[in-house]
Amino acid sequence: MSNQGNSDAKSRTFTSMSIMEFIPPVLWFIGLFWSISKLDFFKSGPFSSQSLQLAFAIRVAMGFLLFLIYSLHYPVRQDADTFKYFDDSKHIYDAFWSNPLDYFKMLFGVDCNSEYFDSHYFNKMSNWVRSYDNGLFNDNRLVIRINAFLRLFSFGNYHVHSIILSYLAFMGSFALAKVFNEVSKSKVLSYIAVFLVPSVVFWSSGILKEAILLSAMGFFVFHFYQLFGANKRYRNYVMVFFMSCILIVMKLYVFIALIPAIVIWFTVKKWKRSWWVYLGMYASFLALGTLIGELNPRFDFVNLIVDKQKQFINLSNFYNVNSGFHLETLTYDLWSVVKASPQGLFNVLTKPWPSEVNNILFVPAFIENVIVIVLLLAALVYRKALDANDWDFIAFCLSFCILLFVVIGLTTPITGAIVRYKIPAIPFLFMAVFMFMDHNKLPKALIENKLSRWINTFL
Image (cartoon, rainbow, N blue to C red; front, side, top):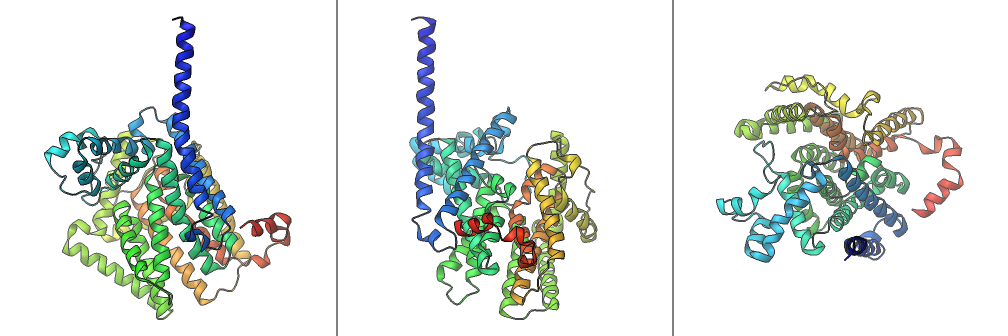
């Protein structure tokens, strides 16, 4: 056969493979896109099917963009977050065909801590054992297991996983948007805060931990909020418990920041609104955290923060990351943590700084920081009178943001990591700022035009 013939045969084979890889994700996207207009879960919300379908399509597009960026900028595939969990899951999935019992044991984490499983499966993975271990929960394994389960339906197609996980994150975001809308009575602001903040959409799309994290957090807040009303159901308690378990395994520090804020919100709505109540309950949570640390040093929050910082500093130095910066070293005492907290909070609120925007991934985060500052100034100029319920919700949002930002700021000496780790709080930050603002006082050109009327109709 001629060289031209060989070339044509290879070209046809490549085209055939590309088409076969293209069809499954397209079919999955069409099916999930269609489900948004049919499921009662989405119909129960305030948004139109078209607006929700647009939000989902944006997330899927961001997932594909994430794939392209990681493909181009990470020559070593196992160093890219979006690939490493997907690739490791194949070792578990292969057992489904050769030894199904092994597959289900690994999938559910039952009776699989043995030399047999290490030698046959786990030692072949790159990320089953983390490069650092704080003795708590290994969130890598949950992500790997979820991808091993999805392989039953994807047949190893990366983009199918990306679309399904984007859909889960989208569902959690929708649940959160329903809460935001019920409290703020504004579809537009709720939609913007949840579905249109670029860094949140980008980092919660595709095969990343954040997709699972935001899904669990959205459902947790939604079902916890249902407990405030008279129509609470048994499933609300079940979902709060189940989502709590996922949050604890995925990102314990997010759960620790969320619990005091949401419990206090629940308490003041049911009992009494007073700054003394807020301060007293936070003091109670601090005392509880201290007591837990005394009973079991493994869960001492000061030790956890200091150890986490040391691990991050060592990783930053080992990999010589481009966006690393100096972070004051903490010591194992509460005053050291308290003293460093303002600087940590400032870093998370303001980074990346203009001098640090040397990576295209930092541009959306920098623009968002500028937008938040502009909105804060606008809120001061056009501030509205807030009722008690508004104050309760804003206090909840800001409490969660501050607690999470402080923990991240104390432990993370890498600007790129800060940009990514703070996204669970960004929708709450935007929503709190939006609610401070009296939109009727804004210039009429901003709120009374064809575009704003179309947006309200579209949503």
